[in-house]
Image (cartoon, rainbow, N blue to C red; front, side, top):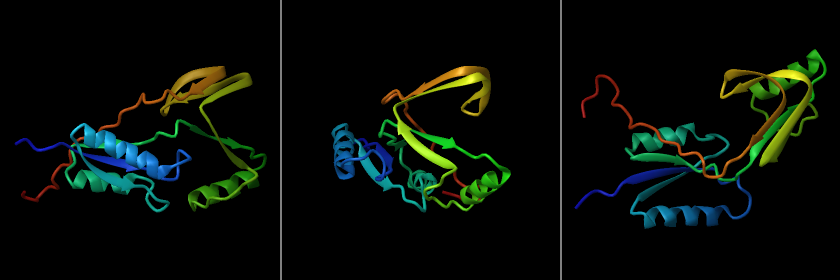
Length: 159
């Protein structure tokens, strides 16, 4: 008998609003119904996903899936005006201190449209793509599938 494929789901219980337990149940049922064994891993403040993803790969799953299903963009808006504002914000970011901040507001939206008086440089996934005075970004539901290769054995270690 063939081995059932094993899938890890990296899930953030704090996103998506509503019923996190229901989203978990629905996901597990759908994957189990497809004949997959499911390893459920939840993110936390201490581990936003990297650690549990490494854990899944180390456990030999066939596929690691993230469930970024809240369907919303996080849109940070900076209102820094002075060098002191920038310095305070930089310290909070580097120390990972999250709190309400007059220099930084975070909005959530399905679609964002930005208009500027003059063209501004734009990057797409870290790559420069030119300048524009009008930018539209929107979520395309269920358009992203994430896969990672199997873990490699560390050098010098025999299976």
